[in-house]
Image 1 (cartoon, rainbow, N blue to C red):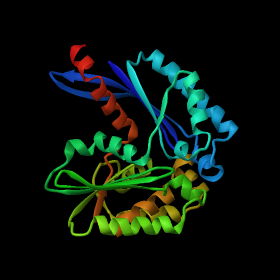
Image 2 (tube, rainbow, N blue to C red):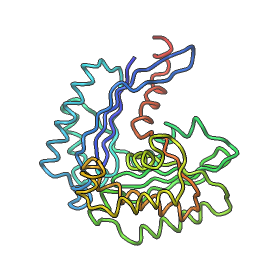
Image 3 (cartoon, rainbow, N blue to C red):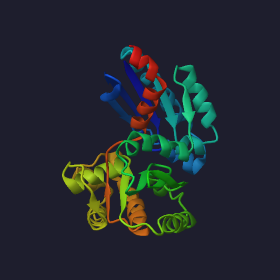
Length: 296
């Protein structure tokens, strides 16, 4: 059996096609195909409050291509979720209708739902009830933060701080301060908080810090990487450091968000397990089709 997850983010649109594996009553998956299209819907949504005609057209073309791939790969079930950019777009519902006409149904989800889906992709399976976790997902338009202690969710917030929003100067000082205050309040009384970061930028920062190993790295290490990257121009980050053009700019504001969070919450380290919304969507599809998988 094969499932597909579509993540329509503010920076990029992703398609993950996964093969579902069953051993007795245990179900897992392997990644068959992962595609990423840097549409940058957030550039329109956060400045003009709507998706422009060219990006509207590109979005529909992308969904049409994804639908063809779902058919070719004989995908049994799929789920498409749109996040901050589509939430903020006045014509988001029109984009959804246009994509529905080419065969892809899109769900526009809020920040809380987004955080819960990603949490289910990783943290739910490894959580130690004796530890305290601060889960952080930084996207193009928003940042979702959740605190878990004693195996329970103690608090969760979504802030309108994201890499594309910051690059487009659509962030405001009050939001940064609100996030700092909330973090200090929610983490009060907890010691040894484990930071878990998700998103393409923290994944890349982790690779730089750990030379491809998935290990925790410190605030000091992240600050040193940030200072190093920020000392290069955008052009030099692409040509000299080998960053993709659609990663070389957003990685700077992403690091700024993570540094702010780590400092405000007194996190000594953070780890990037390299999971995202598409992984959480696949887990949701497994739950939705659990009976079918067992009977297949």
